[in-house]
Image (tube, rainbow, N blue to C red; front, side, top):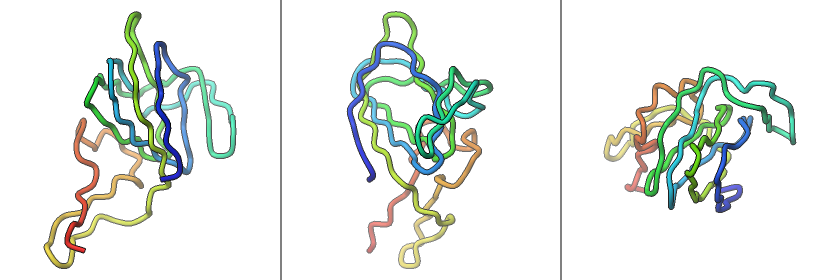
Length: 137
């Protein structure tokens, strides 16, 4: 884990893109949406490895609410979107993803999937478990 924080949001965020960090987002209260994928519109560098812009063109909007979680791979544009009257509280954990390929556990043959290096967010089913952790070791 590189960092973590609690976010309260009542309105839309800027679109953003992190070239080195991935986000695990855990929605604790409220409701809204996250737009994932596509391209950042009018993007500009705001700090090392981070681009922010006005909006996202061509992304997919996912409704989220209390109890939902989502993984945003590094290099993937994303933006919080809230309709008037909506709000949410979320815990965001930022990580530097490990670079490895899908593999089978040598002792139990559990399939371990790594989506952190994939660019095609549409290939990840909505709210699917991103990793099957190897509990054998």
